[in-house]
Length: 126
Image 1 (tube, rainbow, N blue to C red):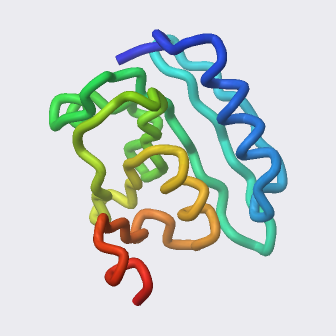
Image 2 (cartoon, rainbow, N blue to C red):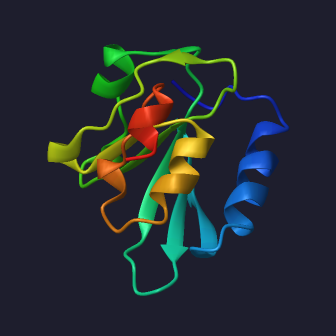
Image 3 (tube, rainbow, N blue to C red):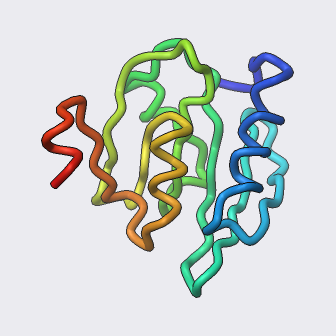
């Protein structure tokens, strides 16, 4: 857990967010142990708190040690492109979990924590 990310990762994520149709603005949030953003969305949708994880393997311990800022929901972004592990949402906590592509898709929905991601192409087309 922390801020151990390659220097190019955050600018890449910020550029993707800034060019997203549903994003009005992104604001960095100062946290001691994580990089985080408040994403203000267009179209009357609620804001989303996004926290970046630097874990190589995002597992149950990553989820257990999530920062307090996500206690009311948000998106835990697996920021390392080479990372693996848990890639499922926790709907009862209004918490989305995944990599950048999943976040970008989720930002189009008010209930971003209910996004579905499948490795099966047929399931994604439903």
